[in-house]
Image 1 (cartoon, helix red, strand yellow):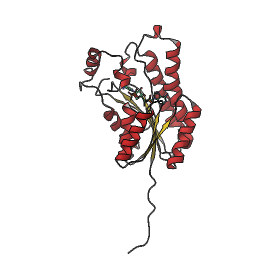
Image 2 (cartoon, protein in one colour):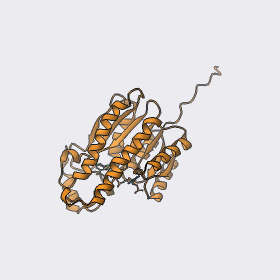
Image 3 (cartoon, helix red, strand yellow):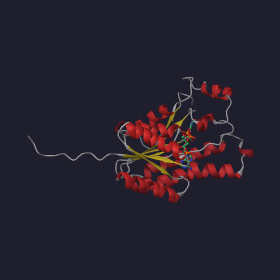
Image 4 (cartoon, helix red, strand yellow):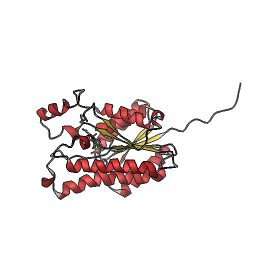
Length: 253
Ligand code: NDP
């Protein structure tokens, strides 16, 4: 009998921003099931984030909750520090945190505060985490950013929100090239309408029904639909997919 012991593979570690609810919570739970230790980032809803951590622990996984406003570069640095302190390394960044106002005025009626906050969270927030990830992800790591299928739909009312996500797609595309030599892939997911409070809040049942029927698959996406697409992009099976945006929307556009 051999006494030689093989070194166990280190546990891979994923940071999921905005993982206290909605799509991010589904991604955190899915990646935990796939064996990742997960950092559940959130902005303010501590109880929700703790509940996701508890659900992961109850299923035998490892997770911690870390509050950080992604728009704040110092908070993002300390989010990455917390991940390394807890789990020793970072392999995956899922840049899911994002905001969309429940009222969607035309560009001409959009106030400065709405514009500034959308830019701060969706663009600066993604920039802040990408800048950290560029130097702190392990070789062979994976980054998944969040765009939206509304860029393709060009729906009135979505000009500023869609513009922030166009910036995310452009950062994805260019950063894939800037990461040359690190073995890290970076892609974006662009969901269609997905049943979370970001989409449902402020809409009448008629609006929700109409938007649900727009895709040829005739339903809203679920957070699990999107988590499955993210699980694919971080898996070895997607190793040759880099710098792309994947529209996960039931065929909407
Ligand atoms: P939700 O509003 O359901 O959840 C948003 C999550 O992001 C929460 O966990 C929230 O934390 C967190 N968050 C918000 N602001 C910040 C911040 N400044 N810093 C850190 N975390 C923050 O959104 P969805 O799950 O629907 O959306 C997830 C992503 O998918 C977003 O990027 C969105 O733009 C994109 N998307 C969604 C679509 C949809 O139809 N739902 C369609 C296309 C794209 P807390 O709970 O603490 O507030």
